[in-house]
Length: 298
Image 1 (cartoon, rainbow, N blue to C red):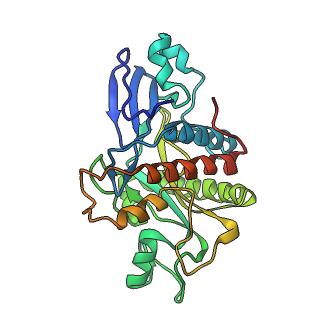
Image 2: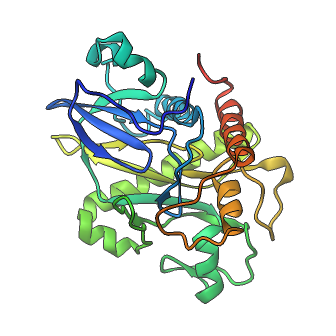
């Protein structure tokens, strides 16, 4: 199937266009989420799509939503794509990359969980021995496993802006103490169970971010995506060693490539060469196969 950079759904009103997902209103209680093949890095949408990326993300998320549904309810509902897009021609480009979900109130916090010291957490630790205000033991190396997974929330930025790490007190002020604690505890529980499953499949989940929403009764739900190469760092367990940035099945390969360019990490982003597109696509599909035991659905 050709890459889909931008969806076109004339029969439904567009609610929001994010870095990767286009969201359409179905009715007062449901939305259609289309996961495109857009790729963002450093919070900039790059001009080159990755073929099948949206279908891979959708299939991985569906796996985790099902596997982790006992931990927290999620956004999925019983409606199918055919139920809301009856026209076959309009529906065809959306197949495999779209889900109909409950219309929930998204919380303005990204629930980041870190099991290993890498990325912005490593940079912060090098500076002052802390990550998001949490003091860590001295002497840790890059990519070290942390004594316990850390909940390190961030703000949820609009397209074109940057997420910012915040401390837990910020989330209490934003969400209220009860919801903030529920988000933290749920994110940690999701990470720990997912990390154990992934390790059995030869993948270390170094860190990940979750998004949550509330229904009309105030019940917490897992929304957006779950434990994908877009929202997580996945490392091969058989070659992992502290002290270096491990190879990965996620966007780290792309980030490393972009760091070699003379680009200031602002819009517009650089076009990607075919070799980089192929390498990113291969890593995403290997993550799908390793984590779920499935290949990309036809």
